[in-house]
Image (cartoon, rainbow, N blue to C red):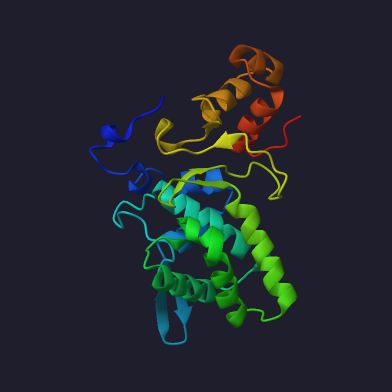
Length: 238
């Protein structure tokens, strides 16, 4: 599928429309599906009196379908920085995000440019009060958030418009070869600057075509083909 203009979405911003299943979101972000389900659907947990329910942190467009929007995927991308590396308890993350929602008057503050500017310090400070008040702890948290923030592009209104998902290690120098853009292929990953779907490349690779053959056929560098395959197969490309 190729590009689609905003007019083809009946006047709705495609970034907010339900577009990804939980399995798809977890796959593209390289997250356990149970983790993403907790963040977006919530979860029941046992207590002495019986059970309690932890409300979701990310707010999907439709509760009944359990499908995520592009904005939700960006929010989960940012939550990954906090949970994967720092193991911040969900209840504390939820409290800090609630603080950002009040400060920004926004339902999706993790997907807004404000977080990249003044909001990042606000968020780290709020988490720091709950988790680790040391300067070293806060600096480490901010650096990790910045690595993830650099994978996001913003539009003129300050809302996330494109996401470059990690295909390997979550580092500053990780290449930005694969992009998710809700205006192209319904937000499914493609090679940046093209409409070439990573899923198509991965399917051809699984069918026996070599990376060199694919690179020649698409007129792309081998690195781009490797990253496309990593995005879909989550393996170390040779």
